[in-house]
Length: 640
Ligand code: UDP
Ligand code: MN
Image: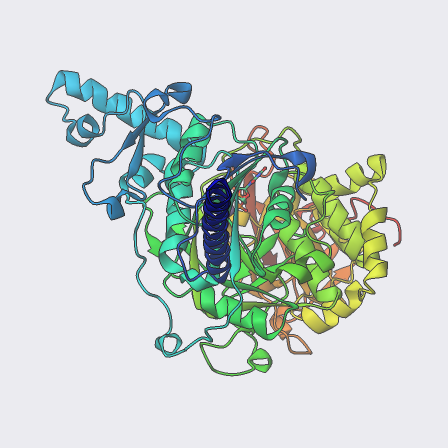
């Protein structure tokens, strides 16, 4: 009896153990299954075990916090205040009262105290009380404009989900992309971005990218100060699937912030995107395809424009490519291709480009790291896209604009942030010039004298980047100019025949106001700037080349001297040919045999460098001082 009883107890215990084991096994298996489905991206991800965690990770000490919020049912961690008490810097966060949980996503609004939408919308001057509020509203709008560089009040009225008109070429719609494209991590760095533009960017990515192609959206906060970007944002993000928020503990700037994001990204392809963009349907696949076909390709969509005043969408004209000038300023150039450049007439084929802007760039993650990421020596903002472009091409990669992909970027009126360092852009340009341009850097320093003087006094250290250049076996700038960017005119800058064109009679310099645009127009004279912005040269073709691209020429038409685009064929058009007579200082227009004369329009205004004083004319040659000119070299940069 006792024996039987003991046996029964043992058997019962064994049964219990067996059941427990089976339960544990089932749990473990289901967890594994979920994880693998999550990795494959074809199943709703499971909630993370710890929604908020401090990660040491590859981001190093700069990384503070990750909000990894893959499930709407996620519980908030201890770092976040409960919803009702969120009043950071007097911001209120209000959940939209929608019944349908599907509409809940993105249905939040941030309200600022004193911003009463209804009263603003209905304000009428007839109603004294409301009228006062209306003008207060306008004041607030003006402040917002100054703060952000665009009409932020208008932006807030536009839904966070909006579909852009489809500007793609009809042939693009016929393209079918492989199911096996690599998945992307979209990295969105932001510093004090407005709520509406930031969230519209995030939602437009989520709304347009197919789930299997989007590994994650990685928001990287570059130490923003604005209250709405703090816990309010953390919480909002916690309700979005596939969005992670990383915060930096240090202000890193564009390149540093993107590098931090790249270190955290899990996708095979990195897509760096500005925090004020809106994607067109189907934008991601064409980019992924080009990268998948060749992992050394760095690609960009066509960057369309969102107007800072109206928030209207403006499609950019194709073909477009990225270029930079001898002041190392980047531009998108839609002015058309030379006939010999047109590889095919197709409007849907990718176009190789000497450079890409920073708005949206897609690159294979491994290639990005192997080619040196972003230059960590760059200060907060500017030039990182030019540096990346020269490096990618010189060190074995290539760059393209992919026309079947379109993303719109908010073209702001001015930058929304002030930098502690006034000459920050020059300092970044110096790094590009000293690392990548070898002897050609002299051409840059003559056109940016501030950069020249900063470099002389500081002698910046680029040894790490030069070492990288050597170790990657990168080609030189001469190769880049002749092979990748042959469209860029290479100035000769001959001694005595280049520099500011100084007029003895008026004491001013030949000038072309930037506001007149890049296509040319009437030349004028203005106070000499001394910055290199008025640099020009008389080259061996007898052209007087003007501007940082060197693409505009002094053109004698009737009695006026205009700037016209210089022809690429040789010999040059006879209307554009000049001779400098050193002895008399006369600049002779060869076709008309007339001399260049500075003509002042009205009296000299008091002060104000760069003010327009008059025009350049062709007149019968005389010894008058207004026909006497000097090419003044402002700086003499040392050799490479
Ligand atoms: N940005 C950043 N840290 C900075 C400056 C800018 O993270 O110190 C972000 C910014 O919010 C934007 C991107 O980097 O998402 C590019 O900057 P911005 O849009 O000002 O450049 P732009 O488009 O004017 O050239
Ligand atoms: Mn931008």
